[in-house]
Amino acid sequence: MIPANYTLARGMARKVLKQYKIVEVPTDLQRICEAKGLEYVELDDPEELDGMLLELEDGTRVAMVNKAKSFVRGRFTLAHELGHIFLNHDKRDFYDAEVAREYGEDFPENAKPPKEQEADAFASELLIPMEQLKRFQGDLKSPDKLAGIFQVSRPAMAIAVANFFGSARNFN
View 1 (cartoon, rainbow, N blue to C red):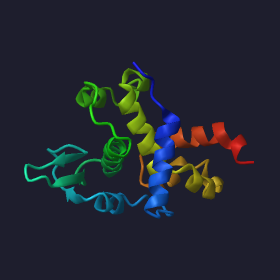
View 2: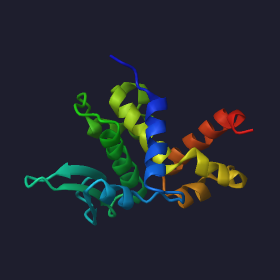
View 3: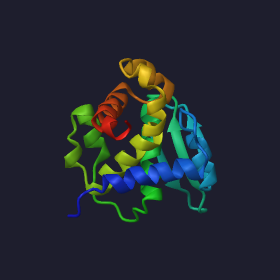
């Protein structure tokens, strides 16, 4: 099995942000969806999934975020699915997202197929661009505040901040 290419995934997210001229946070997923010809829909149904992309029988492609669930979870799910589109993941490995969801944050990233890992890396960079995070250096010790600004979960922000410090030497 070919390992995940995180550099490619993050680079593609930066390319998408540049292509659609998204320079502010939170990342405007609706703009990206509509530019890709996806109908953007916000559900308000606690019984439905967090978010997803689907293709209807008439060929209409729909991007959905469920406001009744965790909004930030839905944003990540949608960004992840956009990652599959932009990374040209045409055939997915079998992966039971429901099992992963039961594990929650404890689900080991390396247990996911490489294409899922790449889509996660794409989503992380799309929602928390390192270039944008640099603008908020004074708030790096306030992950809750940053999570609110970027509209992501606290764990996602904590990972981004850790990655920021790990790559901070590249910014000096």
